[in-house]
Amino acid sequence: MTLNGWKKLFTGPLVFLALLFPAPLAAEDGVLVIAPDEPVALGVMTRSSLEGDDDDVSKLGLLLAQAERPTLSIAGRVVPVEAIHGDSGCDADQAAVLAADFVEQGRVAAIVGPNCSSACMAVAPLLDEAGYTSITPSCTLPALSEQGFSSFHRLVGPDTGVMEGAAHYLYEEVGARRVAIVTSESNLFYQGMAGELDQRFSGMGGEIVLEALLPTGLEQESLDELLRDIAAAGPDWLFCSCDMAHTFAVLTGREAAGLGDLPFLGNELGWANSLIDELGAGADGLYGVTPLEPDSEAATALKERFEAAYGQPPVAPYYLGGFDAWHILLDAIEAVAEPGDEGGLRIDRAALLDYVDSLEGYVSASGTISCRQGGECVNSPSGIFVIEDGEINILRRYGSGDDID
Image (cartoon, rainbow, N blue to C red):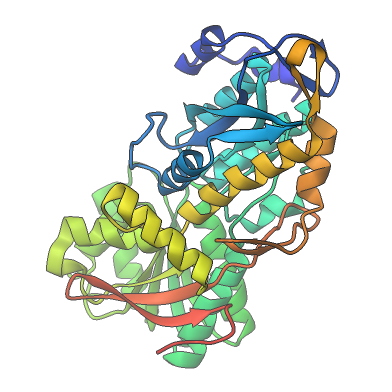
């Protein structure tokens, strides 16, 4: 669908954003022209549009980077940088509305986000057409780098590596041979995780004894029947690649179905923290698979600064990508921006995109960044954890050169 086609669909509340900001000084094909005394703007697409809101950890990482580096240095001038925040939710349609509004404003140099794979998939074609550059801290669906998107880049590893570690743990470490998989059908992220585990565990010689999609508004009768089917299939483990509503539903019903002792594997660290908050001791004994921070001085130092700034540790590693995306895009703008008329600036969008595409050996908190075809820029470690006494205990670490007990 073309940009004009998308715009005909825009009836959501985010359209008003374009009215709040001045247009750039002039419009040129492929060049952003910024008026004198105007800041350079980055669009930020995360779950919450409120600055300082802790709903999305990737945005907190970006806000920390902005606080530490609020300006650019271009041709001997200090130029302020503005972050225009928009709430993309974890929703494809909402994200598309927001992305099109950023394009319509004509003043956004590049995009940080979105935060969910379904949103990234919806936004990328529109940003491709407009010639933009985007960096997501948290979209992990493997298929995103297989679509040929030009705008898309990510500072997190795809689920391929995460689920390779999960399959290895199940098959090699604990001797599982029969796994049942249930997944929420409402989100590409959950379906992608389920598909990756299916492929890798089966490829190692294991058997997926049952697979089921859980619809939004799952009825209790249907859930009870599914849980009985899982028990009858006789799995060694149950993998629930599920949103929180489905996770709670499955956990609540498994005892009555005779699955109370069946090992339960779920999602990432944010998922685990939500379970601890809601279930207390009832979350003990649940396992999860998650991306992790690199074991590096840069990542450790950033985590310490995050805790100092926000009074608590990050609930997921995506703050790293939010922090680094800000710095990478500012570096790119400093490298390609040129002085314009009367003290303004000109930013060639194609040159900015080429800069990010050409990153090689860029050392950051996320790891060493080298962007490859498809937008893959970093190899992220992953891990298997278990909740014990209300704490998250990492059992195995994969993808960083050494596993840990």
